[in-house]
Length: 205
Image 1 (cartoon, rainbow, N blue to C red):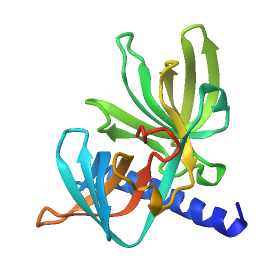
Image 2 (image 1 turned 120 degrees about the vertical axis):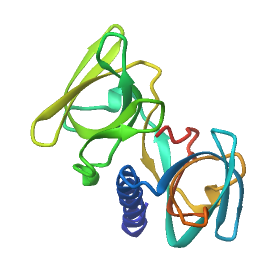
Image 3 (image 1 turned 180 degrees about the vertical axis):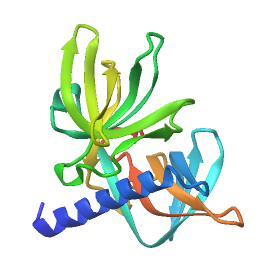
């Protein structure tokens, strides 16, 4: 990959992360998760995980990013990660998915906030302070916001990904996507970023 291509991909990734984090607190923004029904012109039609069909107008200059599979072994102390989690029966937190951010994005959207991957889930963007591996999986301690910490267990089957290159050609029927879109007063959706599962793994966030 040339430096020019790398810069373009990194710019798209930064835009995706920034948009998603901003949307987390914006009432008129929605996260669309599903599979592509059609991509024609600047309109992306998605069948959502709830079974609805949403037509999303992609604004001029929109960006795209893919996701690639990673593993527990790829999570190192000092990495910056985004972890969606829910409370577990033992009072702790269990991961639903993990995104390992590139080093250039360390600190982006740092903190813990409500998320809608599952009911009562949260999203924590933080630095891995330590990682403990046991017979039942791995537990990571995440450090954020000047000293706050959160311990999250990561079961062996947890989806773990990192960002990867993608192009509009990857927006084919059946491809899994994650889109943070804005719903206007007329109900129409617009977006400037698309995350597509183009490397054999669906966007888990």
